Image (tube, rainbow, N blue to C red; front, side):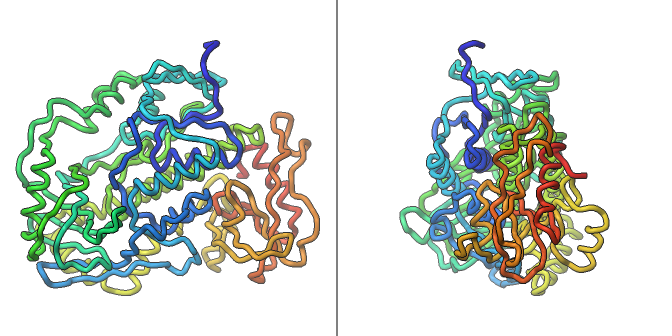
Length: 555
């Protein structure tokens, strides 16, 4: 081990979650390496919707860039029965004061923006490096890579997908259930007369069909994302074994049920060739829409079945999982990438403090305590949407086609849907860093922001008098919002005597901002934009922060 490379954090997986985590850690000066088993960055779209909270996370990381300008603002969903519109749902800002827009944008572009931001912060993914083994001890993790290198890291984080090699090596299981038969997925150039101002869907006895306009790097206005339920479609070629990724996961499993875990996840099933998928769409499009459609060249073709999975834990010693490695979602509602970005931001500020010696390792446990219950709640929602979309019984189709269609035409239901899918509602008020029972009760009665809730990007002023917004001042740092009368000098940095001998808190000084909303309170805001502490005297934030760094929790 004398010649092993040493790094603070090794991140396995260079998708949105892994790249966002690496950016969040680099913002704090933490040494990070990102490795990925793929030979090069993905160019296919895969996930294609970033909700408002995801845009906020990217913005705080400095990775939003020109994505809003490169995206399509398809904020309307029209559902048809044949050629008759049955339901129109409009999405938009649900009144929670966010300047970050929801976007229809390729995951490949999101990853590109994150890679460019990581490069600005001094990092870059390493491609063609597969994790083949990991062994941890009290001080760190020794990871073996497929190219023969050994990497010694203080922490290992798996952001490597549903067949996570990191989760397998740490014996973190992700049990789940299958929710559907085969879906077909494609990005196709189409010649037809459908309006590109929104997403469209068709209810049909053979299965649902959804189409969404996609931005095209070549500037063409004919690229569409298609998803179709095809349980009774043409049979494909019998798979000769599980996908390579699943086999690799089984090969790195540390437990006896390794091979069975991977086989259960993927199974031996018939798979269509790309030409068969394209032929199915040539038949499905006119058959389910009643429109004349000319299918041009494909960009990407795939098939999948939907499984709902949730890791039984997010941490095993010095090994953690995040994103799809921790939870697998149905694609409906665009919640998978969104939840992964939230995982990354939550974990980054906590792990960064611990790695830098500024906080107790117990702080890392609050990552699972805050994020796993959220993932379980989101999974319940996406699973229910899946069951509605694939319903084939008479009762299920009546509920979907008659009851829910009428319900979703109501404006208040559309506002609720926008609010729910945005994840701007996410709160940690019941977690170990949240409010006490009394404040939670008061917040429910008064509807005021509670400790643990997201704080909007409020207008405020810097110490030099320049106008700014709260989220623009975070970027991996804490912020202390104070009333204008409290803008004088004063530090809330906890001292060494406050936090104990194992922590050096010399670099936890929140940015002091003067609030302009007239609220006569001081608010300490976490790096991820959630309220950490409130009080009438800004000096009270120091002891609170000291307790967090010392104990890793506040209740």
